[in-house]
Length: 72
Ligand SMILES: [Zn+2]
Image (cartoon, rainbow, N blue to C red; front, side, top):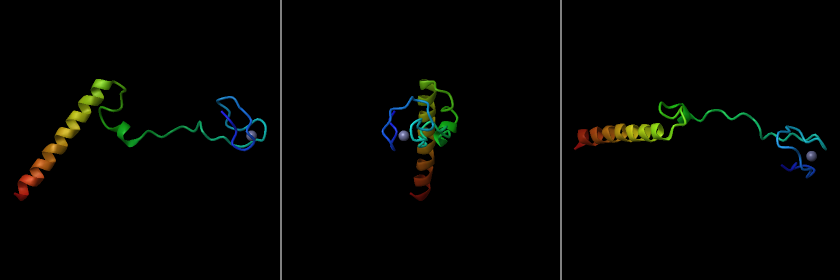
């Protein structure tokens, strides 16, 4: 990658530019997104995620249906 300050090409994992010392803060550990913490999304198994999405959509539809059913 390239240093944004001096333009030096640095090695991939450098946090600081070896030439000018500019902090290249890219390799910061990302926090786990909220949707990743939902059951079914914690694993990286595709079919589990699809199943989880289907269940969530079904629950959502049930909530919406009961909501509108209560009004009408
Ligand atoms: Zn630099």
